[in-house]
Amino acid sequence: MNTALCLARLSTNCSEKLNYQYHHPKKKRDCMKTSNLNFLLLTFLSLTFVWTAEGKKPVQDSSLTPLSVIEKAFLKKTSNIQVKQAGTIIKLLPDDNDGARHQKMIIKLENGRTLLISHNIDLAKRIPNPRTGKNLKFYGEYEWNSNGGVVHWTHKDPGGKHINGWLEYEGKKYQ
Image (cartoon, rainbow, N blue to C red; front, side, top):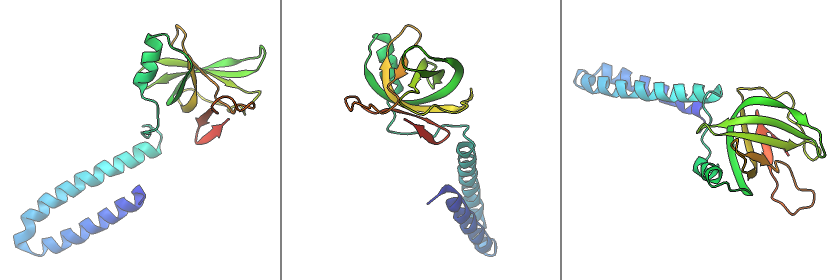
């Protein structure tokens, strides 16, 4: 059941229950306790729905690579790790046009670690007009560097030898 429908049903059920209990004096005290709890629950669900719908809070995805895996790779200077995570775009960089062309941007993960995203635009569609402050989800290969690391292979492998990667921006996948 979607959140809006759930909120509508909860609100209707609460008002019917309050109306019944108000007209039965012995249940008035129970009515107050129930209505306070229902109000708190309704408020929490409403705020969660609005906050998530406006993109203020990323929706948790259990399929994401734990941030601790990326942090451990950085600390141990490990590379060639397939990762799926999300972060906030903090800087847009000029395209790299040496050899295969790459769209580049720096993102900040939830734990504060920054990563360079290097997206091959000869093999995948570029993200049109990405903006700083927006969320970017990615699936690609992590390579260590002293600045936090690079994620590349965010595209399909035309040779079929590497895991296909992607970027997701504003609900659309680029691969």
